View 1: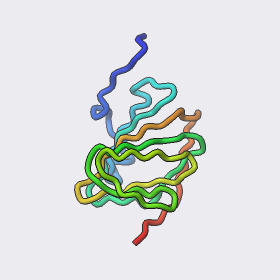
View 2: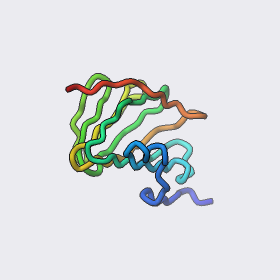
View 3: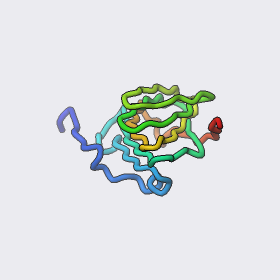
Length: 128
């Protein structure tokens, strides 16, 4: 087996659960055969706003905006997002996304994933 893997991220089958909520989500960790990193692609429809957020017990993540615009709820802060903004989020910090009028496209990069995963749903509130 070679020491690398090539994956066409946008050709990975999108997850059905996310699609039902207006999110086109593709998770590449398995396709990459990766032990330590995960890469995912999220495309949020125009006007989408998450009703809840998530956090992790151990996994640190970074989010790279590759298209559109929007906002990100990070802990108690709301951050405006534009293409090529890169946001690192500590595991315990709650995060969620809201898309602008042209939608929002984000690539997420995560560190090692504990056995069985460590994501936890969390409540959020968006400022008026």
